[in-house]
Length: 223
Picture 1 (spheres, one colour):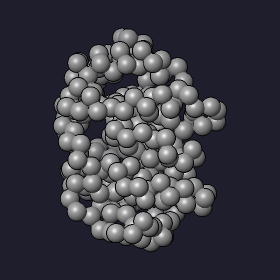
Picture 2: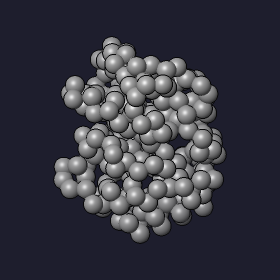
Picture 3: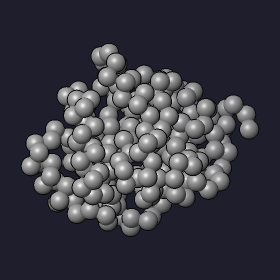
């Protein structure tokens, strides 16, 4: 496979369901491959073999939808080295580019113009030990305006996850400087229960629901 080629699971147009851009129309470029084995992964199909596409074809397909945002996601998109020039080229074409990464790989090489949505994996994921601390360091060391291109996301499946998350947020004072999105693992925790915990603790994180799973069947692809 050439350096200009990426393995793609799907390219589609939908409503952004998570993060600080939730509710906006968005084009998604989902890269194939991950291998980290998070419990409760809702895009396991991206582990399957994808289709190899040249970078320029990917860009043209994405631009066809004329969406206000383009999100690079996976799988784990940072596993494919060709994703870095893809993001740069999209930014060069004046696109607002979002990256959603599992948080296992440092985002140091990501173009500074890209808005980085970084997962912080809690204990229920089974892979909390694989969180890359470099991503928190990079966010804390970023200067303005690039500091605003970092946000963090935590998916909570129960009380242990919540206590782990609040401890981490307080340790690094992440909510002082960054948007931190906190939501429930779909079907694992009553959203109202998480909301009550956050209100009780006066947590300065932003509660979220996965909008696409309420708009469409939770197992549906391409949304």
